[in-house]
Figure 1 (cartoon, rainbow, N blue to C red):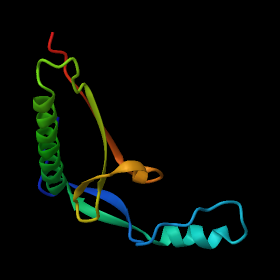
Figure 2 (tube, rainbow, N blue to C red):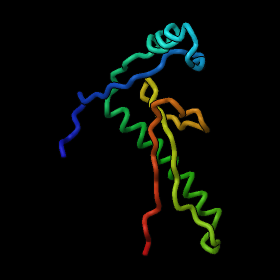
Figure 3 (tube, one colour):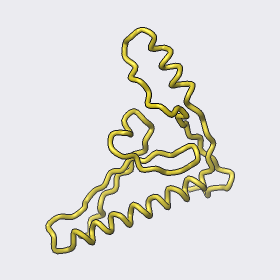
Length: 120
């Protein structure tokens, strides 16, 4: 495994349009809508070290939230939190954001799936 260097970067494609896009169906004039969507995309070069730090902070906070869930459920309960799936987005500034609800549909969200390790 190679060591990460301070000059390591990753390219991220971000959508700079503010408004929710209109659905593109088979109607006439769809080319204009598609071109508008494509023109709103921009490539951003982000330092991997910044992304690593931001993802680490995000995962630490999410871990604390689910530790709290475990504590509130308690050891005597027949329920336990066994698996968690989250969708996250990386912004053009390198922020790691939790995507709520169905907002990730059609976007480049990253799915993180955590499963409890067997304690047997």
